Image 1: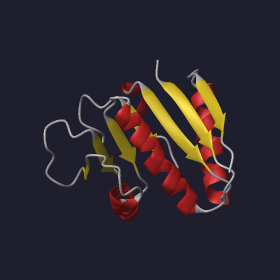
Image 2: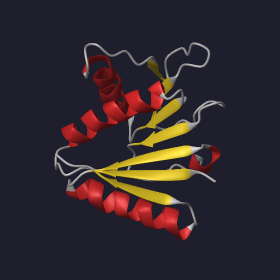
Image 3: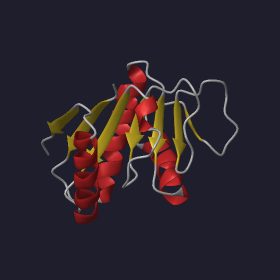
Length: 143
C-alpha cells in the first residue's frame, strides 16, 4: 500500500514551499528512488525545473520535464498532466489535487505550508487519503 507523507511547513510563502520541494527531491533522489514531481500546470513545472537547477549550487539532481526528450530512466521527472513512466517509485505532489494514478507508486509526499489556498487543498487531500485507508504520516517542520 502506498505510504503518504505530509510535510508541514511554518512559512506562508509559496517560495518556501518550492525551496522545501527542492530539498525533498534531493533527499528522495539521494535515497535511490525514481521521483515524479506532479505540478498544477506547465508554468509551475517550469518553475520547479528552474529551481532544481539553481537551489543549491553544489548539488545536481538529474531531472527533466516530461515534455522534453527523456533519457532512459531519468531519475526525476516533472509534469502536470502526465502519469509518470513505469519504474517511478515516488511522487512529490505539488498539485492541489491527488492524481488518480498515485496508488501505483510506493511513496507520496505532500507539502503543506501556511498559505491559505495550499492549506485548504491539502486538508482535502489528507481527508481523501485517510478515507481510502492509506497510511498517512505528518512531519511538522520548524522554521
